[in-house]
Length: 188
View 1 (cartoon, one colour):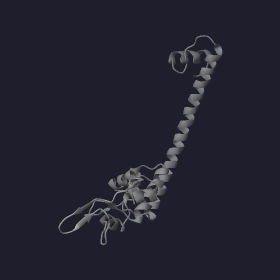
View 2 (cartoon, rainbow, N blue to C red; view 1 turned 45 degrees about the vertical axis):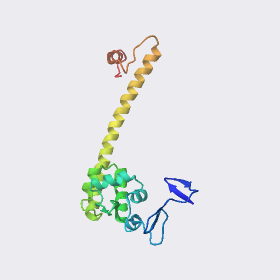
View 3 (tube, rainbow, N blue to C red; view 1 turned 120 degrees about the vertical axis):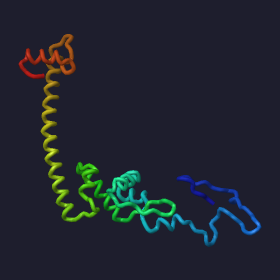
View 4 (cartoon, one colour; view 1 turned 90 degrees about the horizontal axis):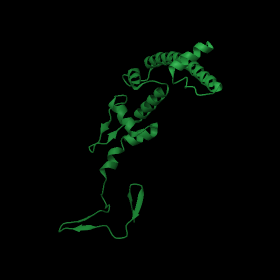
């Protein structure tokens, strides 16, 4: 008979230990009437692991979202298991979609203060998405300027290498870059 330990199965050749007392026999084998309370406890809800698996996140992320109050506080079983419902899975998925759009957890928390996803929340999401578009456009402008600066440095390097001889790196030696821009009439 095999017993599961972690992900491995171990075959037990000898019978399981038995303790005999004057009143009853205690074994490690399930007997009629034997129950496992933890199975009964989790059947009315979803554990952290199941919510995480269904939403495509880690169990730590679910606990973190609960701590930040982005999802409802889980009920607890007598043994301490957190129990969530299907709405929490949907909520975690919504959080992940909002994060994929560049929203911070603080912004997400402000979007859904009462845990609803109605018309008012849709307006707030729209406003925030419009802000994200404006921020993205500004970043694109900054990145284009940065690319232009990089291109100028690359051109300065190419000119220095083409001249040959022992020349300092124009990108790392700012004095040399300034003297190069004076001699060529271009900014390095």
